[in-house]
Structure formats: C-alpha cells, structure tokens
Length: 86
Image 1 (cartoon, rainbow, N blue to C red):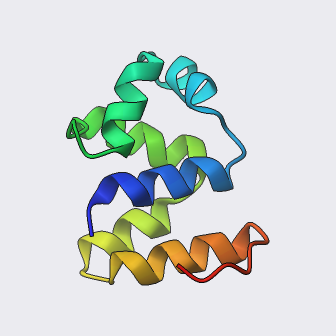
Image 2 (cartoon, rainbow, N blue to C red):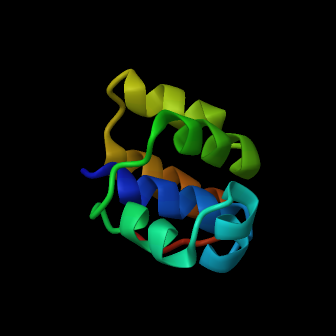
C-alpha cells in the first residue's frame, strides 16, 4: 500500500478539495495530486502540515508503526460515513 491513498483519504475525511489543501499547504493542486497518486514523495514539512490540517496525526503514527494501509483506508471511509468495502 502506498502512502498517497492514505493521505488522500485523510484529506477527503477533512472535507477538503485538492485546491483547498494546496492553499493551506502553500503548494499547487498539481503537487497535491502527485502526492496522492504516489508520483511525488512529500517532504517532512508537507507531511507534518498535512496531518495537522486534516487532524489525522493518529493515521501517520499508525502507518509509521506498520498498520496495514488498506485497513487504515477502510477505517477512514467508515468514519466519513461510507459503507463501501475497498
């Protein structure tokens, strides 16, 4: 599991568009898209700001400690009201 999908799920959970996230992080929408599609690795400053803005520090900690990415996305989707199985 790549980290971009997890970052995207966190952004969606926070109710932010790519454009809004880009503005909050002082990045371009293209940069946000590349990060979410695993075409670009975020620098540490961007990563820390991302989890701060989205209120998902626990997701970063879980990922760093080896929690399965697919399970994390399923949990995030459930939290935002989705019942879809990935």
